[in-house]
Length: 240
Length: 189
Image 1 (cartoon, each protein chain N blue to C red):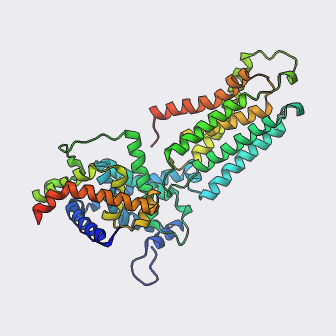
Image 2: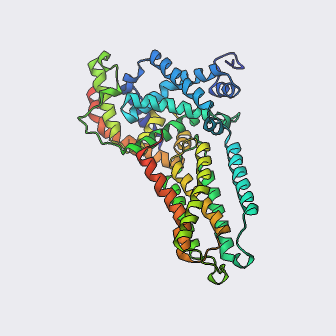
Image 3: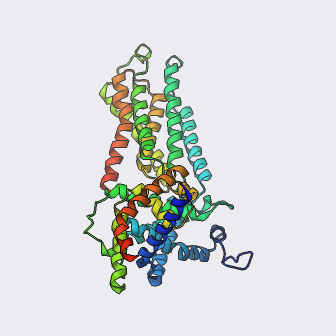
C-alpha cells in the first residue's frame, strides 16, 4: 500500500474513532459486577477435575492424554488376547497404525491452545471424515475367513457385541479429550471421532470374527455412531 | 500487584506473570485494563450488550484457563484479542448471523444512547450500519487495525492469516467504508 493511501486511511481511521464516540462512556459499576461473576466462575471451575486439567499447560495436557492412551493400549494389548500370528497381516498393521496416527492428530487438535487463531473448519471436518473413512476402509481388510475359529460366531449377535464393546471403550477416550479441551470449535466432534478410532483400534487388534459385513456393522459403525450421536446431542444441547 | 521495574504502571506481561504466580489482584488489573477494550470490540460485532459482556467474561475465563501456557517474553494483547475473536466467530457460527437491514438499528448496542447528544447518536448509528455491511473478515481487520490501532503484523497474528492478506482486506474495507460514509464525511466538512 502506498504512503498516500496510508495517510488517507489514517484520516478515515481517525474519523471512524470520532464516530465511535458513543462507546467512550465509562461503566465502572457494571465492570465490577462482571468481574465478580467472572471470579466466581473461575473459582468454581478450579474446583472441578475439568478445570484442573484444562488449566494445565498445553504440553502437560498432551502428556496426560498420551500417558492415558498408552496405558490403556498397553493394558488392552497384554491383558486380552490379540488376533493370532496368521491374522497379523500388513493390512492389519496398516489399519492399526492409521488409527493411531489419526488419534494423535485428533488429540493435538483438541488440545490446541485457545490463544492461537482457531483452525479452519475444513481441517476438523477432514479429520472427522478421515476417521470414519479409515474405519470403513479397514473393514475391507477383515480377519481372514480361512483363519477364523471354527465355531459359529452367531453373525449379527457378534456384530452387536463388538459395537457395544467399541462404544464402551470409546467413552473414556471421549471423556478424557473433553476434559482437556479448553473450548476449541468442533472439539466435541473431533473427540467423538477419536473415540470411534480408539474403539476400532481395540476391536481390530482383538476381534477374530471374519467378514467385511461384520466389521462394517460391528466396528466401523462405532465411529459413525459416536460422530452422529454426539453431533446430534451437541446440536440440541450446545455447550457454552 | 507487581510494580514495574521503572516504577511506573506494570505492563500487561508483568501483570500476567504475577497472575500466573497466584496474584489475584493482577487478574483484576488486567480485567480493568482490557474489559472496556474488549467490550467495545464485541459490541461492535454483536450489537447486543448482554452477549458482548458474556463474551468478555468468557474471554477472561479462557485466559484464566490458559494462564499456564503464558511464557515470559510473550505479548499478552494478541492472546486476549485472539481469544475474543475466536469466541465472536464461534458465536456467529452457532447462531447463523441474522442480517440486519440498514433501517433496523439496534439501540441495545448503546444503552446510554439516551444520554448522548442526538447528532453523536446518529453518527454512531451510521458507523454501526456501515460496519455491518462489511464482510466479517474485513470488519475484523477494521476493528483491530483502525479502532484498536494494532499494527498489521499483530492483526495477522490475531486472526491467523498473512500480513499481506490483512493489508488487502484493510484496503478493501477502507474503500467500502469511504463509499458508505462519504455523505456523512462531506456533510461535516
